Structures are given as structure tokens and as C-alpha cells.
Image (cartoon, rainbow, N blue to C red; front, side):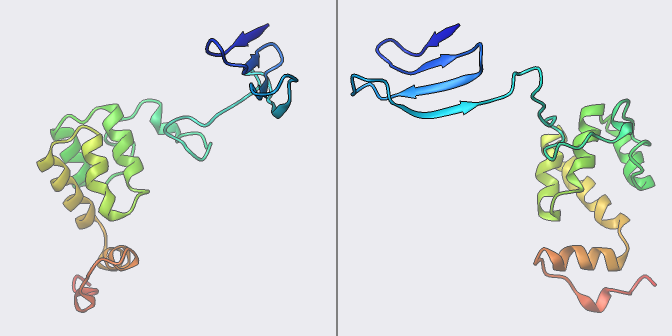
Length: 153
């Protein structure tokens, strides 16, 4: 089964074999400038949108709730209070893999309001120990005060 491109185009796709042939329309003879063999679609696997690395999402993504993500108690309470849904919880959980400076935008993409995103970012920072907070901020080049590193201890 051959599929033709736009009218007047000499590009043809051969769907039955998953081969793409590209020929030059300026020449009388068909000259193949590229041939790409791909496995049939039924064999091809691709990562899920939530898992760009191809890894399966954690088991608790099947039926997410605020408790299943092992957030700090203040964060869990906040997420319950704002009625964060399963999709939002999964996005918020994945946001922890991003740089601190990206958390707020990730929270916004999860459907939180500006105020909720700012509050949640503060709660995440408050849930970290002084050392973790210091390391997170300095690793990302954000200013931090090393004098307060062990203030809570």
C-alpha cells in the first residue's frame, strides 16, 4: 500500500513495510536520498508522557491521594484543603525533580492559583532541613545565608 504526499510531490510513503522513500522530483530517475526502516507500530514502545525516561511511574500513581506521595504533613494538609486532584498531585510530585526555581511554574501547571503555588513552594522549602535547603539553593546558584545553616539544630 503506497501513500502519496501532496499533489505534485514525488514523496511516497510505503505503509505496509514502514519504509519511507524520498525521491528527488527534479530528476527523471528515482534517486532515493534516504531510506528509513522502522519496526511495525505494534512492536514500537514509547515512554509515557509523565515518564520521559521510559521508566514506569511509581505504583502510587494508580490511585493518587495526598497521603500516598509521602509529602510532609503540612503539605498534605494544604493539598487536602485546596482539594488537589489526582492529576495535580502527580504533577506536584514530579515537580520535586525540577530545580527549585521551576517549582512554582510546575505548581501553576498543576492547576494551582498564584497564591496556592507560592504557598506550596514555601511549604516545600519549610519541610526541608536547614542543610537540605542550603544545599538546594546553593546548588542552583541562588543566594543563601550560610550563617543560618545550622540555626535550627
